Length: 434
Image (cartoon, rainbow, N blue to C red; front, side, top):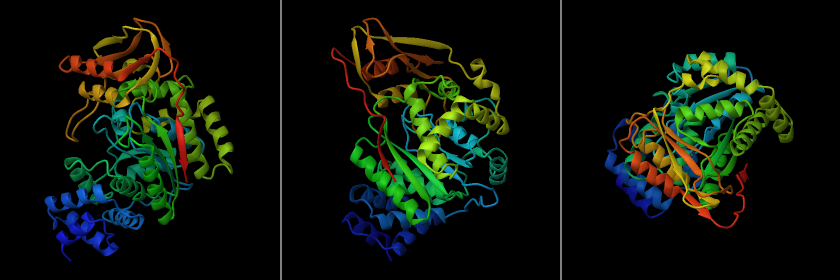
């Protein structure tokens, strides 16, 4: 078997056999196949795609490339939640504590920000003292005690995926639907999950821009789960404007606190409750999804989700008082208001431009080696559909250095579209795939 022949066949749109995919995955993970050949294979996949059978085979091989986390000793159904990445998307920090407070065991394997999209680990690490570098034994112990723990991908979990992802990032193949599906599902299925809830973002602020592609990605991931005997449901949700009002790590933790106290933005609250409800339902806590929705709402209103998050923050070394006293979080040293010269209706807020501006002043990273400033970001003052007057404040940029501030402000200004006519409200949840 020769690597060049497999590249040639995939370039021409042929389906590879499981043993051929095994040859590529194992060979690259061991270092037998050089970067330049696998890069050619990834680009061939980007243009030619992969069949469902190929995607399932690659996912299983990536799972088995390292250790799997056995959670069978912990009572209860294990359900995780994953978002494909968006701007202002802090739903993991809301839905997970709500589901855990309802009795679901939530082993949350989280990722970091890359490009214009935020990362759950970075948000958590803006909390002073919070540890995400847990050992597997620590992770397992916290889950047994609190039903919820947050951890990053360790070197033992799906190491083939880590190698593939690093090369995808360097070869402009991150957006490939089959490669996204295998990467997400490999990380999740390497942990002893029974079920998974997916939030597939689509729009300007997402990696996937078209709904037809988001549907294909959702169907592919649900299919992988089904073939590997896991229950998976996916929501396809709108990411054309940022979710909530806060974009930036510590700023988003503040908004998480407000939302868990039932004082958060309507869009963020709605989608977080729906994700939590589906986690509760797949966790077999309730018999119907409607009962799960009622339970998620109850856990929000009685403060159970809020208290659960505080417990987990303390258990992972953080200061839970940050949810009550925002001055304990990293705070920016400067703020700049962005105003509008004309009145009308907000017809669009380009989430990608807002995300790029936030990243530019330090809230995100362009490579995995970049450091993040947890204090900086953007807070919106308006949302799509809102009527505004000339001179109204559209948002505030919070910064600690002025190096890229002017350029970021220009991006933010370009993100807002003002119309003279009212605009129709967009659906937040576009489709459900299960």
